[in-house]
Length: 245
Image (cartoon, rainbow, N blue to C red):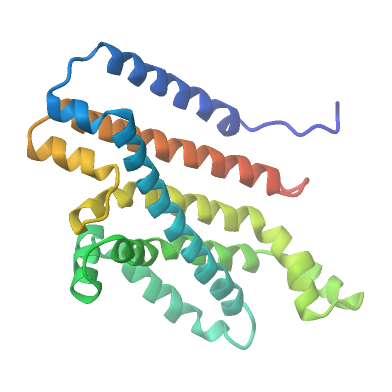
């Protein structure tokens, strides 16, 4: 029993919150009376498509951000490229500094409306947390550990793969989780540029003054963000080597 790892409170408590909110929403949904527009929008066949489109948008943007940000973060911690780190981080910071809606609208002038434009806007908006956490995670690896790896004959590439990255994984995954949660919330804005998402429920609710539709959209986005955050925490906990957590 002493060899078992203690499960952190944020790993087991968050699912309880998700379950309580989900059950509460389901009970409210069953007892509420909806207008025809609300009933059509919240019909499971339509709602399922909307949720899947939102998840697809988030997942595609996340995959692209991970493919770009992690290798870039690794490269910027290598001695030959470390001088470019401030430039790269400041450029990535532009995406976070700019309003998300403004960023998406600007990209429509270049790429037009639709899914592709929404993905590009989301990638630019969410690249900073992963890039920054990759750099921080690798920078905090003890230099003596790296020198010891070199001392036993490890090449620079092998040291990176077998020593630096495993020790930096918790910090990198924290950045990925943060980016995912940001993307789930920001993806709701894609509805303004013609990419379907749960934001469609929210904007329709506001435009037609349908509070139940607005509330449903907000709750579903919240539940999706909480679920992804919990899954990210779970992966982060599992992937963290013993002795670091």
